Structures are given as structure tokens and as C-alpha cells.
Length: 149
Image (tube, rainbow, N blue to C red):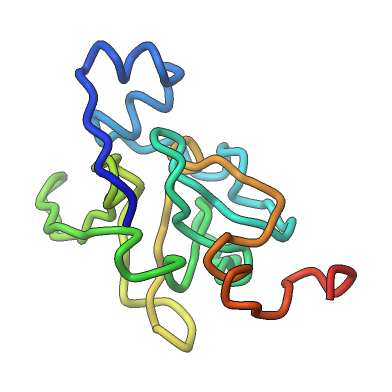
């Protein structure tokens, strides 16, 4: 994992749009079916909007019907961290960027195989890059884009 990113509240406010700040730093949730990536299907990588860390690849993205981008797994287990969330009189598991502690969304145990997990992530916490993740390129794995193979 790359070096931790720590910034002051003022620095985060300057770096992020108001919506990105509210989601990633104040743990807000964007409205369902409104984010840029809930219905996005291009091959590539979803990175943390705050620090640029690789979080999810398009190959793990699926349509869960919930209105937010949903993934079965992060690019690597160390890409994200989780913590218990008891807000809204519920128990949920919050998903955070391991590099900068940005709030990304929540993970639920109602996803498809192979993990059975649904990483339900706010589009405002993500930036999409239309490429393969560096880790997979280094390992020489097959491209998600058949034209690149």
C-alpha cells in the first residue's frame, strides 16, 4: 500500500468538490440512481477521488439494482478498510479507502459469487480511469478489453 495521505479539513475542502467532500469526509450518501457511475460499464479502474488509490476494477462491477455502483471485491484486500457503522439506527459495515480514510460506502453480504459481497459505493467517492490496474498489468494478466489482448 502506498504512503498514507493525511490532510487538514481545509486542504480536503480545496481539493474536492462540495459533494465529494460531503461524501468522503462527512460520510454522506448521494441519492440513488444519480451518481456518475451507477450505470457505467466501460472497462477500467475506479480510484479514490481524494487520493487516487486504486479501489475497484470494472470486472468486479455488477448491476445490483440498488442505484449505486456495486462491486464484488476491491482490487486488493488492502485497498479498503472497514468499520462498524451504527448510524441511522442500523448496523452496517462502512467501507473506507485504506490510504486516506475517505468514506466510500458500505459492504453487504447479499452479493453474487464468488465473494457473496456487495460493495455499495458512492460515485462521488470514485474517479474512473479507462485502463487496466497497474497491479494486474505488472502480473501480466489478460486484459479486460479483448481488443487489448
